[in-house]
Length: 244
Image (tube, rainbow, N blue to C red; front, top):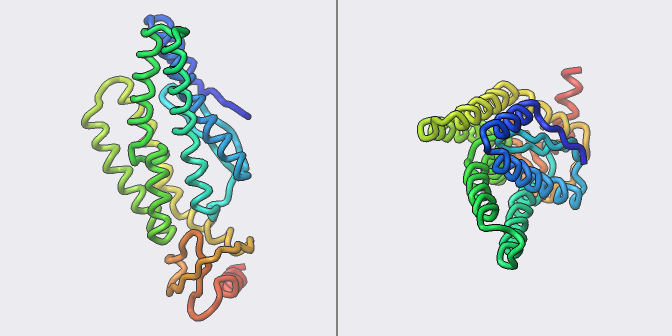
């Protein structure tokens, strides 16, 4: 498991030590690591190509080297690993608290951190788990291209709401990070779609569902398409032959 601690995290650790909040920050980062470990172990179960875990002072990211056309149910399974590990850790802490091995002070800190992280992480904002969950659900309903556009619009709406209601220093740092992530999603939307189509040209995906479309923009995850009365593979071969 490759773990990369962001430089900003070390700064926050130093500040927390100087301000007397080191215990809180330490437990906060511990729970973040446990959450991301859940993504990692669940992804290993289904054979995802894992890249690394990045630990930020306000959350974490588990990165993969997977195709954009990976099965949505597998992606959902990997996504749920984080919250499952986090809840299992809380139940373990609760058990240790009831047995007298953990003080009420530490238990209350962990309980509060769990609530904060779950509430924050499941906001429908990319790249948070909530944003990814919305994106997966939209992929099951809409075309890949439309799903990404709608996910970005939802993310923009909720980041505005978040900025309005949380103007603390911590909230401002989070907002800057999320705005940067949404901006990258916007500028990469064309690249992601092209990669999505290129993967289909290069790989022989064996999806069971068939979808009839009149445009390449209507291609959908987990589906094989018939376009202009041609199989998807035939259409894409002609398309890329014309380009190259």
